[in-house]
Length: 146
Image 1: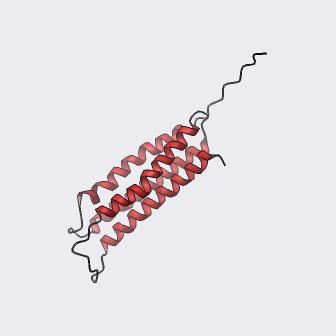
Image 2: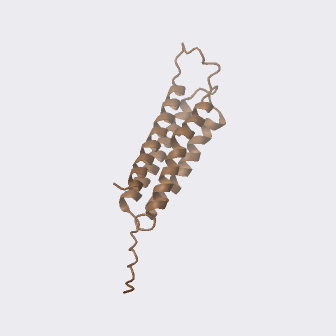
Image 3: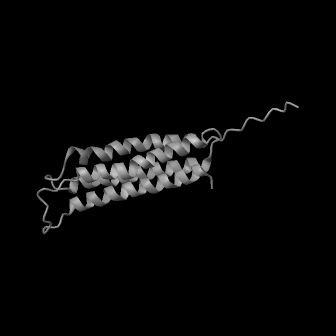
């Protein structure tokens, strides 16, 4: 596989990792154990920022680099992997947003409500960029000078 294919595969993995991390935090906050000793001072905002910097930011960079490397010739496989990453991000953030109503009001912050919406909106351009690679462009023939 070429380098851009590996970058696209890595971006899918990081999008999935970010969605899984976010779902796990939202699920934990919807069902906090009663014997949790830090229940009064618990805030998910630092964890969410950490997950953004570890997961979705590199995933977006890898998807963008894979797009830039393959945009001249177009590639259906790379485009479908980028679209798949966008779909994984969209579905994961939709699950997170649906879990907000189960979270106790003492844990709900602005970041907790707005991050899923932000990344649902970000997943749309990722999918559009992936779909733009479906058009395979023919390479220009080399000119023979001799």
